[in-house]
Amino acid sequence: YEIEAFEPYDMKFVKLMVMEGSCEIEKIYIREYAADDVFAAKFESSNPGLDKIFEAGRQTYRQNASDIFMDCPSRERAGWLCDSYFSARVAADLSGHSRIEKNFLENFLLPRSFKHLPEGMLPMCYPADHPDSLFIPNWAMWLFLELEEYHQRTGDENLVSAFETKYEQLLDYFKPFKNEYGLLENLDKWVFIEWSKANAFTQDVNYPTNMLYAEFLSVGDRLFDKNELAQEAEKIRKVIRKQAFDGQFFIDNAVRNENGELEVTENRTEVCQYFAFFFNVASPKSHPELWKILTTDFGPQRENKKLWKEIWPANSFVGNYLRMEILSRYKRSQTIIKEIPEYWLYMAERTGTLWENKSTAASCNHGFASHACHIVYRAALGLYRVNRIDSTVQIRFTKSNLQWCQGSMPVRNDLIKMKWKKEANSIYWTLKTPQGWTYQVENLTELNLIKE
Image 1 (tube, rainbow, N blue to C red):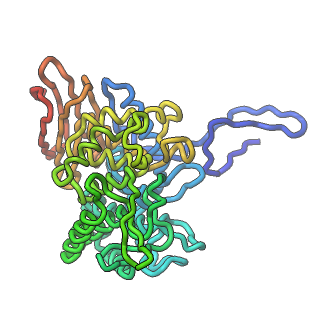
Image 2: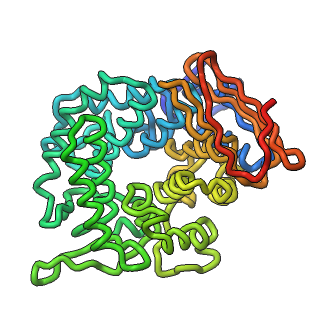
Image 3: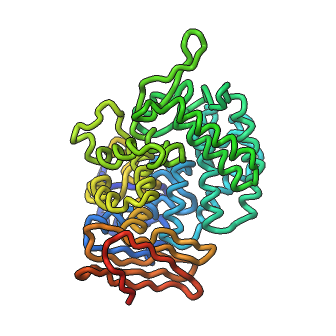
């Protein structure tokens, strides 16, 4: 007999049992079902830990990107929004195209309506049935943040234009939830921030959700020329700064008292601070003391050092990844390179993949976590921004303890190749791009740059 089971199994061990009689078993195998176009992407450095994390990210991505972006290749082969925002970046980095992302986004576009969901709301994951009428209002907003980046990656005007009606319907869905301050209040169903204590502070007014809502409005202005939304977004940010900032940290939520007045709580989480900076409610210039705390006291060692114990810690998704994003935005790559192994190396060493949580409590192979590849490319190799529409590369050299680094990134049907090494007081580097591409260089080190 020759038997093959067509099921999405994954496993670490196989136990074979003969219930009666005897038999000989040979040629046990797994036929791999995974993305096959990610191996032209390369990364190597003087830090073996970074290399392991990059490879774990590659494996995590390819096992969760066969036809759409999935959460994990075993229990939950489903395409979730928000997670896809991060996976989509990696798709472009490792495969050089966004075809799977287009498949993923089109699933949310093509149905005229979604059974069991209120008018205007989008599923938290799709294709999927939602007979219990559950949805995550936050995830619907994340779709349009991803759509904007998809447009920047591909220039696909048609898909963006086709989503305008969906955007307007979602915008209308949220209108009844706006309170006297213009903030969303008492949103229905599963208001989700991340797998941490932050999920306990989602009502009545959740400030991280409203930070996201402000960015959702700004995206509507940028994608669909709805200029009035940009003004509304800035008003919301101002209200959040006034209500939620206690002089040291941003507070997670406010609730109605017995007189119907909105009272800010004392609930404060790490991820809320990252939301504030990621969604332009705060900046190092506007909130310098908070920024100093985040960059010097917070991070992967804060709990071990018992610092700011009153601030509930973030989890891997999305808090720790948003931390990497804001550190990158404000040119703190040296901190990123230090923290990357502390966040993810133990995962790469234990399973060869990257996990949903900081612990093994859930999936140990979760698609969004492959975003570590994007972070490593950007912070360590120096491919800070690759514009596939304008054919430009922004190179950023940063201070770090790395002695050398090299890698390649697929773009269309070609490669960007880059390598550098430190010698004495100089960095010797090379860059090869497809014909017609241009580049810009930013040197944040104190070393001379010598292009070979």
